[in-house]
Figure 1 (cartoon, one colour):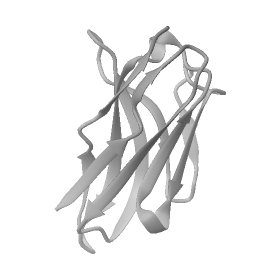
Figure 2: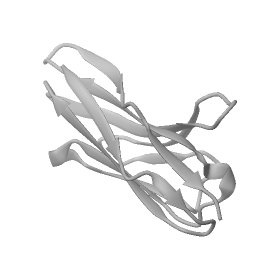
Figure 3: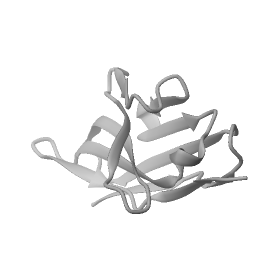
Length: 120
């Protein structure tokens, strides 16, 4: 039906930057809210940032001023620009989206995750 595929993770030094991408494909009528979550080793998954179709954004306090979420509605893609990365940002980052897959029903879909490691 619907797939979300993340890309852009990797190893970066503290203070560095990465840009994550997540593309939705399949039976998509429209995407509603899209977002990024992360899960660090031994911790629960937490919300990082969300963006509505009207480009209203929200961020976790821990990333405000450093991360920027954006989206391309035509391409059903969401991005996460991460600057001034810290070791505590190390986690698997998951894409999340609420998507209408027909004209009457929507669902919440998840990507498989991309690993971000911040280390010197």
